[in-house]
Image (cartoon, rainbow, N blue to C red; front, side):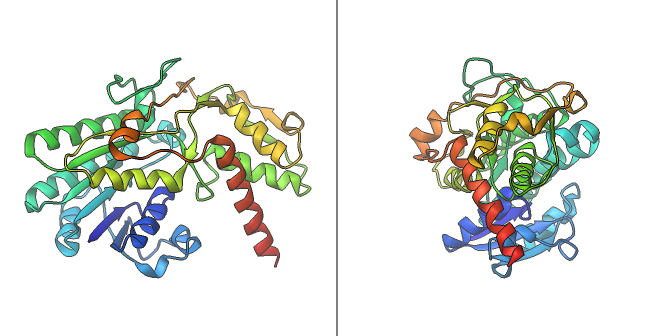
Length: 323
């Protein structure tokens, strides 16, 4: 089996590549410029030499089609495109083009080749908007509140249309927040973990954060990629929510991180109103019942487990650099 992982250098792409290699796949990964990319996440996982990489421009149909003709993949995992909600507010056009047009180009290229390629599209819980007290399921109406969420919602409907209109095996995984040590520090979870570890090691810095009252369903990224794979192993293509089913405040995430390191977070955190987002989601709750029932997928790790594993990894790499 051949798998093409688009966005292989990111958190999910790297873990997915590792997962697929262990399943015996030949794994191909794409980046905007494969010659210039460091692929540091693949190196950290020790699989850089096992993944064949190539350059691919998502918003260029010819580039996408050439990649498909060259590799002849059995499965495509589209995890590429701008991935930060915060950055999408600053760069809405780039976000929309990379996510929406990129998804459309892949589906059209699959239709053009006529090959029975299975396609996975990375959706997002951000499409749901504020879920309130009721957990969102696959039938919950979308209420996107950021350019990123709007782009992901658009890509979702493009996938659904190609599945119905052209009988292409295409599905979207609506993943709620999932974290790991491979997150860049521009993501608040990694920012919290890294800062807390530095403070525990003697740094006098203060951690500046925005709204810590928001609530999210945080899971462990390495097990979420299995959900992606399972979607493509079904007899019929469909869309699924992947989540833990447990929602926590960001304040709880912070408190867990600092208490794990023997610290009181209130002594080290400053709430900075300039970091508030104009249309942030207050509560994100996910109902993964369909994935449990049809895919046999169930989250093993909850928020507190995720925090502790990220801290252990941060300390491990710090100690390795010292050695």
